[in-house]
Each structure stands twice: as structure tokens, then as C-alpha cells.
Length: 462
Image 1 (cartoon, rainbow, N blue to C red):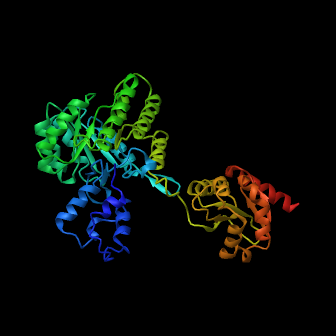
Image 2: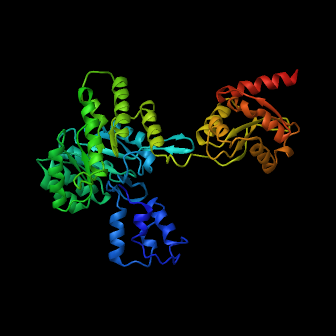
Image 3: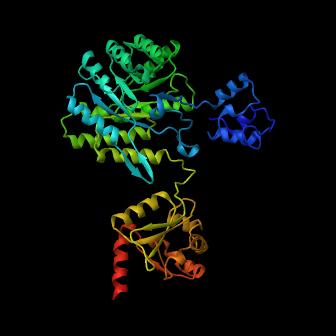
């Protein structure tokens, strides 16, 4: 169980000095429990007391840093099994693998795709996080040549080779960039551990389908002084997918519920394995890879290595990640107010919606793609959608009336007509009564709004 605010409060000095910026030690304890403050802000504790509190606050899963600078990624840090208990921190990192046997042109093209990949959804820019260089050729020379091409990459790197000589040669080139070493196995454990310690790099422990052996080797790595470990229990596809998911879940349960020190580390999945087997075409492989990535992410994967770079394959994985790592206690919202689209005049229609981010950005996209000319009045509903905010009494006539006065829309148009969403029909009368404006019920689907506005314009011109 994670530490509660009361557990933390018992370890604080209880002086209520307010030097941490909070009114009381209890308020500070609450902030610490929600990861909204840092222990260092308390100046009334001894080093010993602070260390003890840090131990209590340490997440069930160790946080592991890969890379350096502003693009470094942190994986792990989970404290709970279920998102509703708290929230999930440090979104699953999505890594694209690039093999060392590609031609210079193919290599550069794939790296460029990874570097430039960006997709915006509900106001957030979704990107890929790192590049994995795979020693597919088995040649140390080719591996180091590929690594050398990426020594100045802005993205963190994962070095993938079981050969210790190849790994050492690669680390001599980019060891100061703190790449993730992949991977230590039963056969190369000692040498890989020494390299991880020498270069201060995180190390992946690869033990396929054997959690007992993984526990043994994890203990061995910790005994050697390796602290930053990533666990890879193997990604098995087709007939082995169920076993893979079970092992991911078991590792996370051992970390969160049992506090087993050998399993309190981030978990890696490798959906890219689909591209190594089978005779399916690239589209089928991409679909299966995407589905596997989603399954592993839902089963606590902290980092995923993927082969495909097509937008249609990555968007489902990126949007799932965004949803999983959105705090369920804090609805996504945009600022309430008046937004303008297209060419406007005193006769421009006014559409009303809520400030739930997904609703707003869907409506915004539909209005822009439909080249609509209108005002959009966004009501503060606490980040709730239309139907939910009606049920919760946030989307009301009073709220709309207050916003109309606040944004001064009455000075921008000569008419007094509002168009509300189709789902808002139950409160149309209330909005008319409280605002004094005429209310029209528009389409339920915002994609139909541009055509709806076009028909209104045609009727008005007759």
C-alpha cells in the first residue's frame, strides 16, 4: 500500500512553520502524497529524518532515467495497480527500433521519421520518445557505425546487442548520453553489469518466460551495485501472448503488493518481435504489432520497442497512452470563453459547447475542416462533456447567460440567437429563459455543423 497523507504527516516535524509554502505540515503531507511537492522543501528535518521520509515516499516501481538533457525519458514510478486508486505517472515510452544492416539511405529515412513524428490530439502533441539501435548484423563494426550516426541524436538511445564486445564499443561512442543497455542475460550478466556501472547507464535484464530465474538474476545485479534495472520477461506472440500478459501483471503485482525488491523495476515489452517471424504482409504485421503494444501497455509495460513508423499504426497506441496517463480525477479542459472561426460579421452564428477538451478539439476540427464562419461560445463545465454536464447541472442557462455577459458577444452581433448541441436539447428552454436569446438545437454530431450552418445561411438569404 502506498503511504497516506497521515503516514507522511507522522514523519514531519509538525511545527507548521509554513516555510515549505504550505499553511501546515498536514497540508504539506497531502501535497507529498499526491506528488505535488518535494521533501527538500521542508527545512526543519534532519538528514536522517529526510532519508526515512524519502524511503516511505519511494514508489513501488523504481524510476529509471534514460538519456540526458531535456529529451531524457523517465520510466517506472508506479505506485498502484489501478488508475482509480491514484493515477499513473511517467507515460509508457515508445521506442522505434532501427537495425544496423540498413543502407545509409534507409537508416537516415527511418531516423528522420522518428525524429519528426508528431500528432496533436486534444491540444497535446504526441511524439515518439527514443531510438533503439539493433545489432541485427551481428557485426561489431556495423553496430558501432550505426551508433556513430546517432551520437548527436536529440532522442535517447537504446543499444541492443547481447555481445559484450559490441556493447562496449558502442558505449565508448555514446556512453556519456546515458543510453539503456539491452540486454543482460544469464550468459553475459557479469560483463554487462560492469559496463552499466562503468558508464552509469541503466541496464535491461532479459529473462524470457522464467520469473524465478529473473528474480535470481535481478538479485545478482543488485548485489553487484546495479540500481537502474529494466525487466524484460520476453514478448511472445500468437500462442504465447496470454502468457506474456500474465507475466507482466505478475511482475507488477510482486512490485506493488509484495514490495519484492527484485521486481520493483520498470517493465519492457517488444512488440517489434512481430516483424521477425511469419510470412504476413507489412500491413498485417503492423496491425498485430499495434494490437500487441496496446495489450502490453494495458498490462503495465513502461517502455515498448516498436518497428513500424506508419501513422495509422502508431496513432492508436499514442492515443491509448494519452488516455491511460490522464489523471482520471482531473478532467481535461480548455479555457472557457469566446472563440472565432473564419470570416465574421454582425450576422455570424453563435454555437455553444462545453470546455471538455475532447469535445472542444473535436468541434474545433470539424469547424475548421468545414470552413465554417462562426463564433464558438465555450461554457465552463469543469471539463465535462455536454450530456455529463447537463446531468451534473454544470451546463445550465445561468452558466450560458453569465458567459454571454462576460465575453461581450452582445456587442459583436446584432441577432440574439444561439445554437446548442443536439445533446443539449433538454436545457434549451432553460437557456432561453435565463439568457433571453432564441435557442436552436443543432446536430448531435459536430461534423454535421458546417452543413447545418450552410442551410441556415441559405434560408436567411431567401
